[in-house]
Amino acid sequence: MEEAIRKLKELVDGSDNIVFFGGAGVSTESGIPDFRSVDGLYRQKYAYPPETILSHTFYMRHKAEFYDFYRAKMLAPDARPNAAHKKLAEWERAGKLKAVITQNIDGLHQKAGSREVLELHGSVLRNYCEKCGKFYGVEAVAGSTSVPKCICGGDIKPDVVLYEESLDEDVLAKAVHYIRNADMLIIGGTSLVVYPAAGLVRYYRGHKLVVINKGQVGAPLGADLVIDGPIGQVLSQV
Image 1: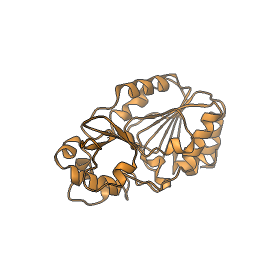
Image 2: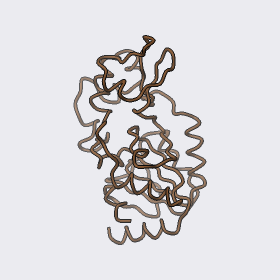
Image 3: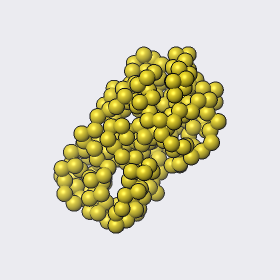
Image 4: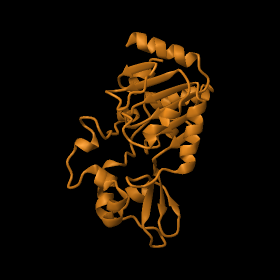
């Protein structure tokens, strides 16, 4: 591990156009469970699988049940940025890191101070009325019971991408642009099994591809450096 950290620091020091692509593992050290690990949401038991509950179809047909699960398992109001979030924000302030591309919906990168954050799957911090379009903060959902309602009477929906829904094309285009132009791409805290997000890393053209993840990554990437470990613990040493 010591040698891997030394190599990572060397790569970072020699780069000024770093892009970070992250997933659920970035936030586990902040107390937010991921989906696919031993203790992840997909290993827990509910009346329906989490993939089903977090689908557009389920949301439309069983909104009250969707919100019971969503409030209990998808919101983490007390979570705080960990060492990984803070290090990435530090690199951005130093002009080395140009963008964070995240599959997470918790807003912790912004809380840590990162400015250029592309949220592929949206954010729990933004919610909108399906009827009039009025936007609401997370409190409108967290403090509600059953289905949260707008002042106009419409249902409030989280601004997150559910299964069966498409990713925002503008966000995708910006992500591709950043990855294509990066001189270093760091992939962290993701097993790269969720598409189309995982396919974005194929746009990287450089020769400094780093993977930091606890456990295996789904796709063989031919990375220049692979570090198996919690990303916060790793980045805190760089």
